[in-house]
Image (cartoon, rainbow, N blue to C red; front, top):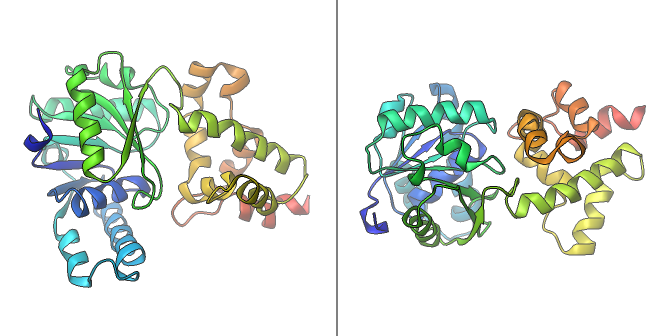
Length: 297
């Protein structure tokens, strides 16, 4: 299938990343988009996030009129029916970062989607070959990892499983370019792919410094931002993305891929997540955990 043959796109999951991917598919790609989630409440939050993103990044900056923003919203339809969402040419999964959950979703999509549909995952680290193995079309399964915020970040990691075809890889790269992104191709046996594999080490060292009370999370992030010209420090970025909860949810996979020395999450992450400081939409993270709990110990 060529990029011209992609007429309809679906996004599975309306959370932090799913909503943003739906927005860019509609806004830049011009596609009619179906966005799926488990219930209407989750979908409503996803649409609220899309409207907020359009206002913040485009309407308020004079890059788009309110009418144009409404047209983007009009291209996106919400559904709680997986069969409806599966009726698309290119489907991007963006559910919880857990292999068992993702494989279940891929089995459902494989059963319901047209035979020529492509199935992509926005996973930030999980093995694409394992996801493809849950389907009867592993050649049409690939990783398409966007970075947060999707409206701003140009990188898309196109992650090729062992059985992903050349056609699938090329189509995904072409789609990323149509969305104004810069695709890079990575093999899926690199856990965390490229960017997150390197970033994980930096974040873990920043966590260790918080654990040792070397400095506050704010000052550690400030040192890395000013010292290395990063737009956001690793701690505040993980607060924003909800990465603390994601790290715990995917721990079993990271231990399997990296071994116990590198795979287990830092005890500070586990402590925060157990207390509800997961980061992400409307949730507290390490900044709040330091101010409210850790600094008082």
